[in-house]
Length: 147
Image 1 (tube, helix red, strand yellow):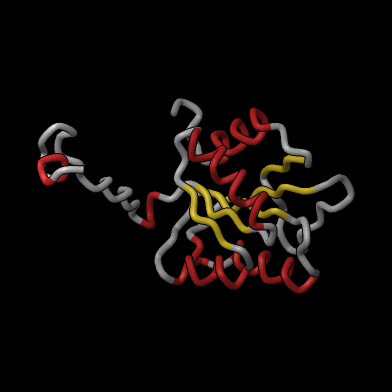
Image 2: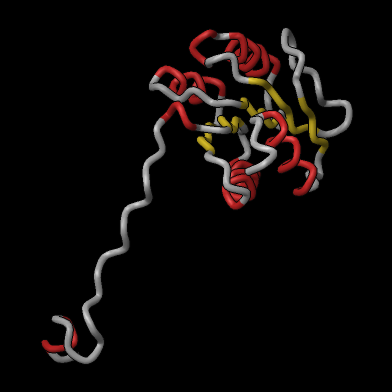
């Protein structure tokens, strides 16, 4: 590589990638809570490709911290897999917390693993998750059917 290559010669000028745009906390569609990082990343990626803003949290405590810092989601999407009874109780409390902005609640679960004490989820998707079903539910619960 010659000095000309680095300064805009043969290869042209190579610039740094632009920073990802930041999303104002109040515009978050989904606060996704789940203990399994791989499932969380997959679901978040799917929803982002469907034009939803997503904040990921690995626990009820992390989700509560996101809300405390200003995250006001339209939907609290909870993956019930690998959650303890104490974690489910904390998630239920988060769903009722006024700081959560009255977000609707939906769950991802396996059959027979759908209980979330104290909350009546507005939506459920059973695992294995059907991508089209999940996106449709999130659009409906976030009132973004046209988006």
